[in-house]
Structure formats: C-alpha cells, structure tokens
Image 1 (cartoon, rainbow, N blue to C red):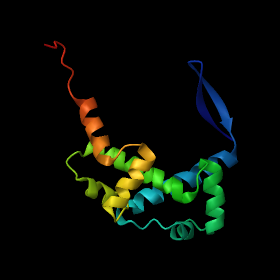
Image 2: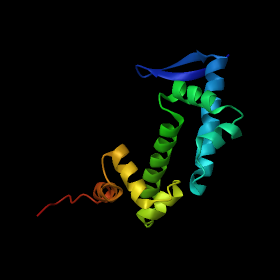
Image 3: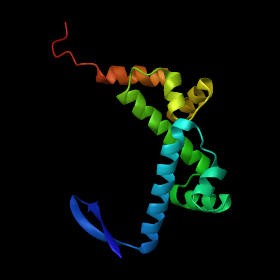
Image 4: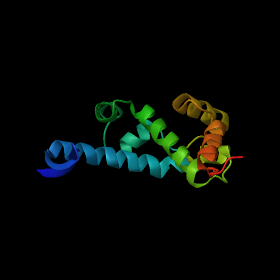
Length: 142
C-alpha cells in the first residue's frame, strides 16, 4: 500500500492508497500520455488506442468512463482542448489553424466549433481574453 498526501484544513494528511487506485492512476496516466503523444499526428482513434494499451474498446470505454466520468472520445477531446489552451498561452504567434493541427484536428472550422462548445468562447475570443488579461495595468489612469 502506498500513501498520498491530501490537504485537509491546511494540514497535510497522509492517506493510504490502495493498489487498485495506484493501478487505475497508472492506467489513466498511460492513456493520457498516449493521447498527448499522438495528438500532433491526429491519430486518436479509440480502437487504435485500446489496441496499444492491450485492452478491448469496451474495456477501455468502461475503464476511462469509471475513472473520468467521460467516454474515451470525450476525454480525448478535453485533453486536446486543454492542449490548445496551453498553446494559445505559451505560443501566441501560432495561427488558430496551426493550434488545431497540433491538437489533432485536421479541419480548422471543426476545431473552432469544438473549442467554442467546450470553452464557451471561440479560439479568437479566447485569445483576445488572454491578451486582455496579460495587458499591463495602468496604475495612474487619466
């Protein structure tokens, strides 16, 4: 049995984790790493990912759903959009279509639709919001 540190009312409490929790965390970490690895190539088909993880598609579906509350496809989409947000933040010089391609989307319009659906903002609006939040604050307004 291993332990993990959990914050409880500003106190660090060591809570034992079960072998099952560790195995589940490792599986999710492997799945997440595999998705991130393949994101740039756009090769994110659930059947192929399951095969690489040596599980059936239905086993992968059950496992990812139980660990994340989402289907594998929805979880992959979440990871892709999180990566897009990261790229918008760290590489503002990239065009929106380049960010989409880097996140596994071959159609920039589809990437923009999915981004808006998940974030509630278009990629352009998200960028504008980032630029606005990064703008220096004028300490002495006129």
